[in-house]
Image 1: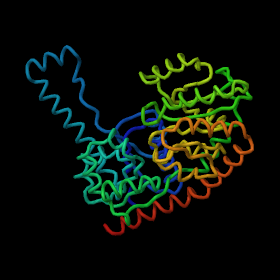
Image 2 (image 1 turned 120 degrees about the horizontal axis):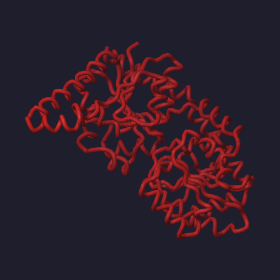
Image 3 (image 1 turned 180 degrees about the horizontal axis):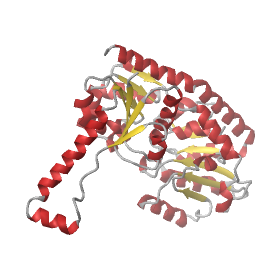
Image 4 (image 1 turned 90 degrees about the horizontal axis):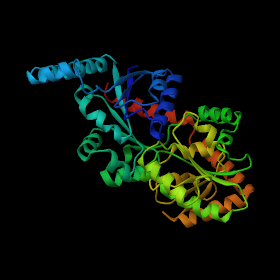
Length: 399
C-alpha cells in the first residue's frame, strides 16, 4: 500500500494538531503507512516522529557562513548568488525526500495547511486529495489567503468536516459539492480515556496553586486569542464568583501562553480583584491533570468548529456550557449535556454555570450523558473505518 501524505500547519499543542497526532496513532495501529509534512515545527514534533517519518518545510537561509563573512560576500555581490544556490539546494533536498516516499494520497489537515499544498502541487498533482477542515469563518480569515484557499478547494476531491456547522459553511461559502463532504471527528477515544484515568490517579495539581480540594472548578482550555473568548471567560468569572461568596468557586484556564494578551487579561483580573480566584495556566503536556478537576466546562469561544477540548471534557463527565452559533459544540451538548446560551450572552452563561454549581446531581447527570454521546457518536474504530473507506474509494479511481 502506498503512503498517505499528511500535511500539518505546525506542531503546536493545540486542537487540530492533537487530532492529527491521534490520527497518526490510529493509522500506526492499523499498519497504514504514512508520512507527515509539517509547515512549521513545535512541541509535538517529537511525538509525531515517534509515530511516522516527518519532513519539515525548508527553512529560510538566514546565514551562509557568519555575519562578517556574509557581509563581505554581499558587498562583493557573491552573497546573493550563494544565497539563491543554498535556497535551491534546500528545496531540491526537500523535493527529493518527498519523491522518495511512494505517496498514494494527500490528506491536508486544516485549511491553514493549504499553504503547504500549493507549493508541492507539481509533485502530487496526480494524487487524490482529502481536506480535513477544522476552521470556520473567523479562522479562515485569520489563517489563510483567499487565493491559496481557493486553489486548495479546487483541487480537493473529498472534504471531511468536524461538525455539521463546518460542513454547512464550506458548502454555502465555497459551493463545495455536498455529496463529497463527510462529517465526523477522528479521535482516539481509548487513548483519551486512558490519559484521563491516569491523570485522576495523580496528586491534585491545583493544590500547588493554593486551590482547596473542595473547590468547585469552572474550566476553560485553549490558546490565547480573541476568537477563543479569553476576555469573556474573565467577565463570566466576575459574574459567577460574585454570587457565591460562601463557596470556593474558582475559574481555571489551561493553555494560555505568556504574551501581550495574557498580560492584559492578568491586568483585568488584578483590577477586578480576581487574581486569587481565576488561574491562567500556560500550555502544558499535563493538561489532563487540570481538566479532570473541572466540575463545569465553560466554552467561551466566539468561534470553535468542534473543539477537541469539549470532547475531552465530555469523556471526563464534565457538563459544558457554550454559545449558540459559535460552531459545532451545540450539536453535541444539546439539552442534556449542559446548556447552550445565546451568542455572547455572558449573563445567560453565568446563570447556567450558577445553576450547575448549585446542583451537583445535575452536573453529574449531564456529564455522564455527554460522555455517553461522545462514545456513541465518535467511535474511534468507526471514524477510522469511514476515513479509510474514503481513501480506498479515491485511490481506486486513480489506479
